Length: 376
Ligand SMILES: [Zn+2]
Image (cartoon, rainbow, N blue to C red; front, side):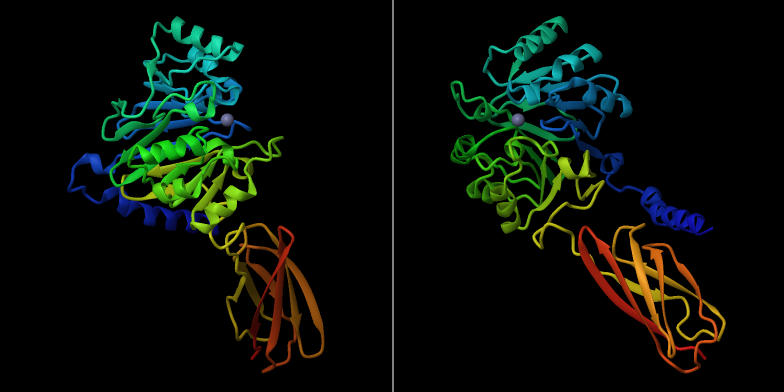
């Protein structure tokens, strides 16, 4: 029943948004979604553009993960594939994607590599009957309803593959995304010097959060509200670095991490952006600010009555402990956050205020709160 009510409530909240007539025409209701796919250590970003074009930026190291994710998203073909640079953790999976999907255009920076990964990629593109289009500053992409253009690479970087990264800025309505590939400090300062407008609401952090990227100058230029780090859990490189995490914290950027939260999905109608998960960290610290609260359905129950204690403020399902301090005895109960706990209060002394101490442990930290009732 409670579930049903919740469902009903969520429908009620949702319905007005669906039925509000759109004065600006259908365009304003279109949504763009950006999926930072959890591919372990590497990058793969799938974008469903507002008018339906499918864009893929990198394919992780292993294409299977990406292909199965795209299948789940019911992707039929890919209008634009972007290879940011020839490193295996970005390009490795693209040949699999080329095998699995009809791809209509491929963009990559003008840098080659000697690896099998690079040869497989070239072969895949050729088999698709395509020629690689050069990704570099100023090159625009035709994505309906958006402004999409590369802001990097600004110049050539010889064998320095990371700095060669194709950096895409994608704007829909008032909201922008900047996908930094593995661009490092050098490329960042070149982009700043080239007077590119780098300002974006969401930054795909460069090089998996390595300390060689995401300089203060770059953060000042991008001014992101949100940042996404794509990295593998417990990766051997120590990505993301404490330096970058602290820098993001300093600039009050809400952070999402694939290594901690899995695939991150951002959706925007051009006015607002929402994510599928809460930030992994914000300016206030590495955990969202949790605050335990406890409430009772009845603070003046009759003797032998039943009261329901609801505890909130931590993820649902977390265990809590409630200690009832009756006049003559103390009783402890345990329950789950988000699920009302029914307690029969017995012959509790009339008019005596019973304090309830509630505590819960989450990720090694103890949270406490109190409530009370007075039997009548
Ligand atoms: Zn990388």
